[in-house]
Image 1: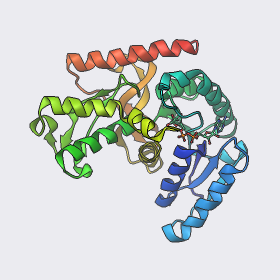
Image 2 (image 1 turned 180 degrees about the horizontal axis):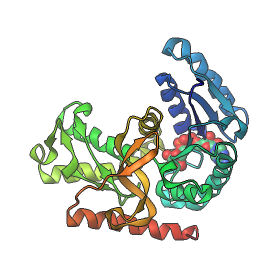
Image 3 (image 1 turned 135 degrees about the horizontal axis):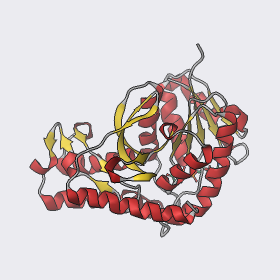
Image 4 (image 1 turned 45 degrees about the vertical axis):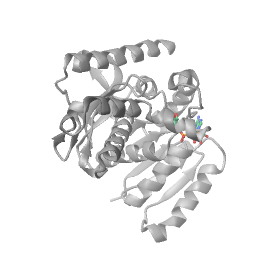
Length: 309
Ligand code: APR
């Protein structure tokens, strides 16, 4: 039986970090593709040569040719422009949509049975765009955002309490932008509700820092945006699908009435397995939480109009 294959489109910061993390899992062959001539090939070779020490023996191939993605189980899309300081995710919309159109056409042509995991921003819009352009069923097109937002929240909670991040579970819903909805009620430390460990104003502060998590890093980097945590978040999703782990993770998924929302991609908890998005999990929300989610959805519905949807 041949090994499974994951292709990563965009060999920039997020794409190549993901390739490095995924290689170390030794669970699938990897193709790293970019439009810039030579660069993905060099990075692919470089990653391959790390194998003897990091103990992986899968194939890592860099490429400028979409033919190489054929037979992929999963295609992760990190191609696009990264946010620059002062630039909102929303500013990126038109430019990145052009790139996603081109990338999606090639996925349909060369890997028609694959799943598309979108990473490019503005995330929920690009995921919707890839869904429409590909004609793939909704279970095979989803986006990475909620996992990243949740691991940021988990990190801030762990730092605040001085506990291990491994014991902190968190849930963040909504669009991957300023309107995201961290859910402290569904955030626990080894099963202990966060509300029993921190006062409301502290929790509010941590939610706020999570909301600004990407911007905080952009301000330091000056050029480019975060990539280690986004790549790690994507890794978790890829692994859950490839190994059929059925993790319940917040991802950008197409809602069809869940949470009273439809016809858009937005961050909701889903079960991720070999079937991609196998089901959307509906949490019981308080009226103010539901309102925040609907507010976020409205922002993204309006943004979709920029692309004529
Ligand atoms: N086809 C393939 N690759 C492309 C295309 C295209 N049409 N257009 C751009 N790229 C490549 C670039 O050449 C670059 O190598 O996409 C890569 C993007 O890498 P970076 O600029 O390093 O950006 P990165 O930090 O990896 O972020 C990628 O993920 O988190 C989001 O907002 C972020 O949308 C951005 C994406």
